[in-house]
Image (cartoon, rainbow, N blue to C red; front, side):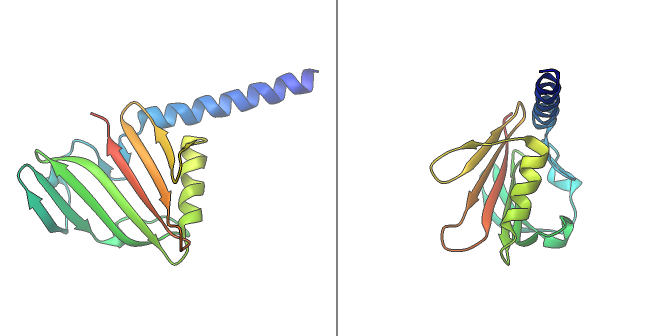
Length: 142
């Protein structure tokens, strides 16, 4: 009986730590929501529409072991970072999903995607149907 109580306590502490990490998440690595575009280097403008801009980021800007990126894009609204978008390549989506689960816990499963929702961020992981890659988006909730 004591063994079961210890296992339950360890599981609860692990869940609490991951929930805390999700609730304190405010972007991804050096891409912090709310920062102005001048805070970032080597951005390539793709689209500008009114108060919104979409930039391409060099894929070497993010180093995640076992994951390769087709692209990394960031969006600004009113000159504040609001979205970070990734597309994996070479069948490396599983490593990114593992990272998300290890750091943010078990996601909510929707029809075609997984979702994590924290106080400052919403993360959507959508695996592609006919490949082993995925689109992963981090959205600011502010």
